[in-house]
Image 1 (tube, one colour):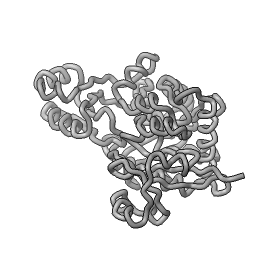
Image 2 (cartoon, rainbow, N blue to C red; image 1 turned 45 degrees about the vertical axis):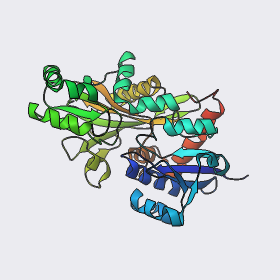
Image 3 (cartoon, one colour; image 1 turned 180 degrees about the vertical axis):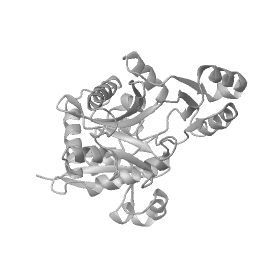
Image 4 (cartoon, helix red, strand yellow; image 1 turned 180 degrees about the horizontal axis):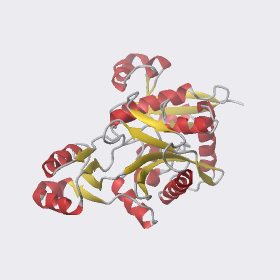
Length: 352
């Protein structure tokens, strides 16, 4: 039998393109060579696609790769994908990768892919809308308020007064469609509100103002397999910074992680997994996802960040939880591909 040609799409146009490069590189390195032929596909900052050799994948940054594209890579059109790959492993993160854009393109080209379809991917990126949906399903989410850029420019003083009345200090300000803590600011006093909102608005046209949560942060990988949805594991997170920043997530030594959890009681671990599965289903996620949240000091479970995909660097939650379940990286990657193929074979129209 011929090997399945797996296009690993990495890089991209978002603030998380370096995270995407690390994820895609690791997926490529851990593809089972007996089953799959890896086809590394780099998306540059303009959205153009390139077939790249290993010598470029191993470059440190997307800028390093981009400098070599004209001489070492092959530029392809979107339509070329149907002739080059049989399956797409989406390693893009953030805008144009997690938000339904690349999923829509692959649906039109009739190429199966990892993760959920267009709608669920978009919901997984929009922090405001996902909270509305999760709350409607009876799941606990942080108290929040959306602030649109147009309203902020017109009524800054009125909005600041409203936020002071609604939230206790400290509270957080987040762009509604960014990941990896990009643009997140912790507001400790009234004089910081304007600065933090303006900083977050550099990344989107609206921000989410969210209450501070006192508790233990967790992350839970969810898998869909043969029409069943289950939690792979649970990781307890203790960042070095006062909140879980970009550097805490990706710089070595900046965060302590415990899989299984060290300070969350076993009975609560199982309850958290059930809540994470409920969030996965409520948002229509498919294939796999990552549900983040807090086990609060009063015993509540609060879902804060449902993700329709997951980072896949070697030290990621994904591979850490897979290892605890007895799976090597190549094994869990193969399961993702095979499960996604089954999901796409059974769909009618675009994936939902």
